Image: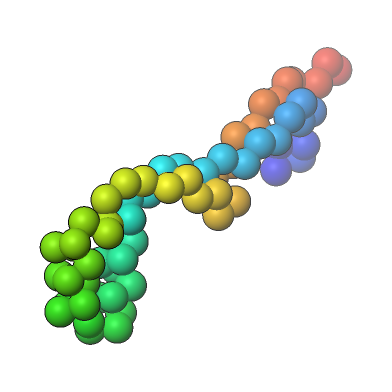
Length: 69
């Protein structure tokens, strides 16, 4: 798309984000699998604390420069 409007792509980078274990397991166990009791057990035992980094390659950073005519 950038090339079609006169830009040269200098770099393309994909980046992820940090996600919480608690939110991830809530989505999986409670919303999808309907396992509320198991989710509450894991949360009570503090197994859901912390973050993890996930790159699903859906966030993209482009650097581009307008081509000289």
